[in-house]
Length: 203
Image 1 (cartoon, rainbow, N blue to C red):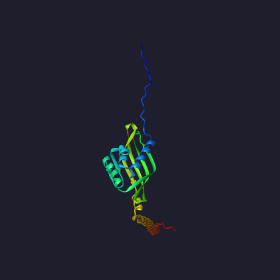
Image 2: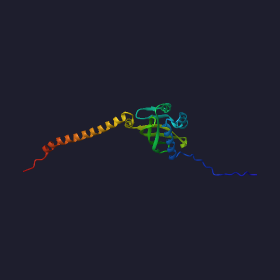
Image 3: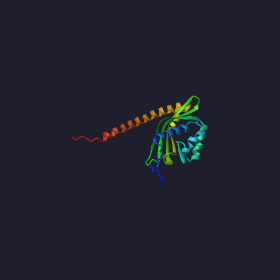
Image 4: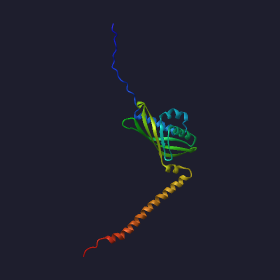
């Protein structure tokens, strides 16, 4: 007796990929964890370290380092200094073509809490370059860059903040005065030259 075989059409299962919304959620989570000194190291090891490339590069206005070991040491070492946390105002993620790499931009404010009940805001732009891995199921950060203005730190620093504002105001007026003076001198010297070079009317 012949055995009846159930021949159903064979389909190759498609692997789900991370969408832009998923990537934005993950980079928001990564940023908040890394820039909050109240987050314990164990949480970083579980939720941040798996997304770091072995050759990750970190850049800010003062430093440039490469390697995941150095990066992890810096993350853990930040927990032993001044307290700070991050407030994110905007975040966007773009993927290149093909969709195997991308960039995330985070616009936020870092609050340095040097003294109790006193926070100093510093505007910060974070840039993450990343590669998609595991068929689009996950990613690895290959480059992390911090961009912030030295002026913001000086303006909110204790004792010297007011002096820095006064310096900027004086510098602005001095620059404007120098421009006006140069214009006046240029106009005074061009007057006699223009009169000398003017055509003589014919009689």
